[in-house]
Image 1 (tube, rainbow, N blue to C red):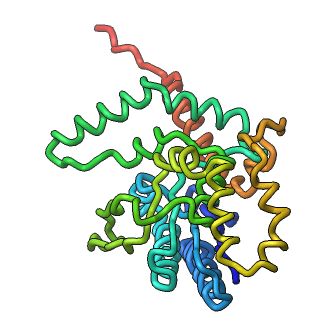
Image 2 (cartoon, rainbow, N blue to C red; image 1 turned 135 degrees about the vertical axis):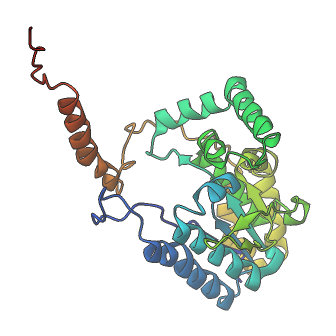
Length: 297
């Protein structure tokens, strides 16, 4: 009698261990386990417990295309989790693909400023122009790294509402457009993503505004309750009343970077190596070599 289960489990942090010349690296085995195997266990457990719907927070299309080569373990794990969700829940599973998520104490101020800038006509125009020029080039492929970098981040309250819409059934996964394909393995072979209902990052806000409002969520929750026993309705009446209260994007004041850099210290590893080479280059190009004047006749 569990209506829905949600998994936001995932990890894209670099390995804390120094490896190689620059020190910074990602452990593909750990990435595969923490993004794949862990979520597969969650999906299988949810199915055994009789969960009706499963919602999974994965990664956006552009981010997946940009990272499928550099961090194969991360994308491989995400793909494994999506395959498990679709295999066990079919179209009763919905996958959301956010890019950067901010809020709740993580880049509360900086994330909002970044979202405002990347949502501006200037940023959107540059991205569209860049893709148009790439489209008429010889290669024709999109610039996935630029697309990922110029994708506006999503506030955690917004994606929470979108996920709630998927979990309660307010959002009907059958109305979503077919999922974009075009992925490749590390060996260059095409990889077909499962056709699970997928909400990409550029549609998350729209889903939240159309199907994640308090009224829509309360209506969907009421439908669920009506299909249950009267005893279950009575037990959930209090939570239903709470869901009808108007809740906006959190306006609480958080420290600007609270917890935002936890686990990201390895990004500092290349700095001393780079500083050494910059210093060596500066020293080598500023040496006053002795110049011997030509002999006089």
